[in-house]
Length: 174
Image 1 (tube, one colour):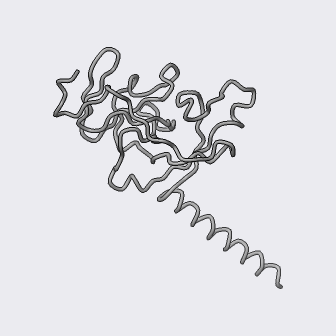
Image 2: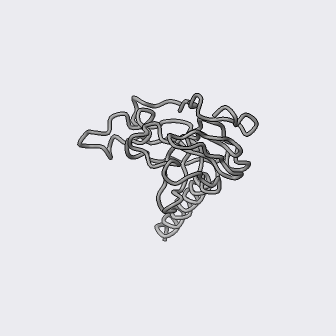
Image 3: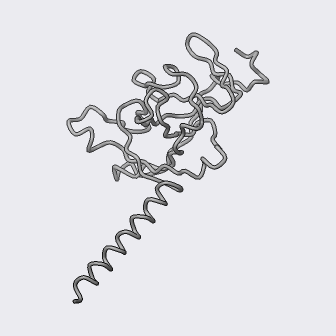
């Protein structure tokens, strides 16, 4: 008679832990793998090994920034691809709404509700230079820490591009 009540108790506890984990992951933070070389050397500095998927960086993504879309130049974000919403990309914010961003061929104005993102390794990055400004509604969170591999654990630095971005009031610099 005691076995069914023990199983039921364990099932309830597992379900409760699952619901709490899902809620935390959805509202506050989650752990995301970073694949590929587009953000190297910030993430995955060595991507030529036989065990690439085992050595991929795992990062902490905080989601509280989504409440008011509070982002800064140089933040690293996770967002859904504008071309395929099933794909997630990790890139650095170069431009925010109202900014003018200089590219190789043009100067682009970032519209309200959008941001301009680029990978740290421009030679192998599919980013705003390919698909244009990213709607802020596609952003899933801000990367704050590297959690894996153990020797790379630490915070993610905010880096900004010099002389590539201008606010709308000083657009004549370009």
